[in-house]
Amino acid sequence: MSTLARKGDIRPLDFSDMASVIKIDRKLSGRSRTGFFEKRFQAFKSEPDAFVYLGCYGNDGLDGYLLVHILEGEFGTPEPVAVMDSLGVQPELQHQGIGAALLEE
Image 1: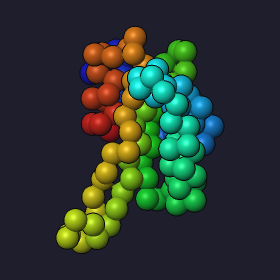
Image 2 (image 1 turned 45 degrees about the vertical axis):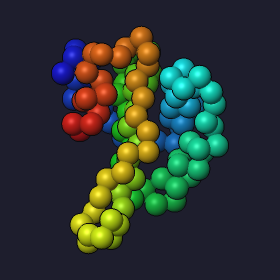
Image 3 (image 1 turned 180 degrees about the horizontal axis):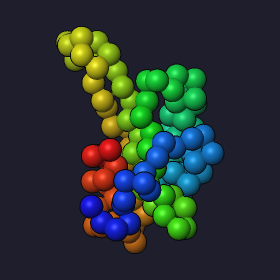
Image 4 (image 1 turned 120 degrees about the horizontal axis):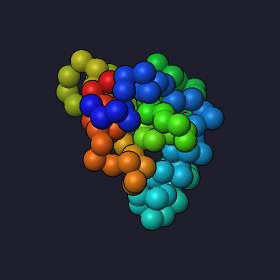
């Protein structure tokens, strides 16, 4: 794990982090997916137990994020399944273990 992605730097996202998530995604995709993230965060807000939303925070704010939806009874199994909605790391901070740390967490 990189020095940028220490365990203490990773914590749950909250609704106020949505703008930072959108900004990172726009840098990565080259387009705005604001509507997608607004819908995902609204679902997270209304049913928080069905989602795992994590952020890795550095000195300048959000360095990366992971959005996961927990589904039950999907794919023919009664066991819960985690479906990744989105994963993003600031372009200038990639290849430093941030994404791997978020997935590990």
